Amino acid sequence: MIVVTLKDIAREAGVSVMTVSNV
Image (cartoon, rainbow, N blue to C red):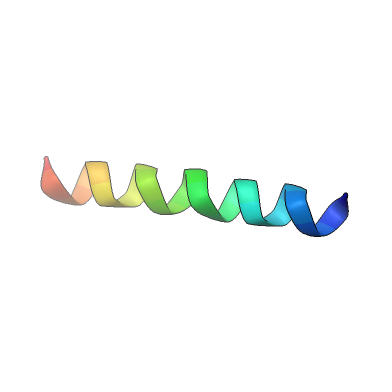
C-alpha cells in the first residue's frame, strides 16, 4: 500500500511539474 501511494504521489507530482513547465 505504501509503495502504491508513493508511486501515485510521484506520478501526480511529475504531472504537476510537467504541466507547470509547459505553461
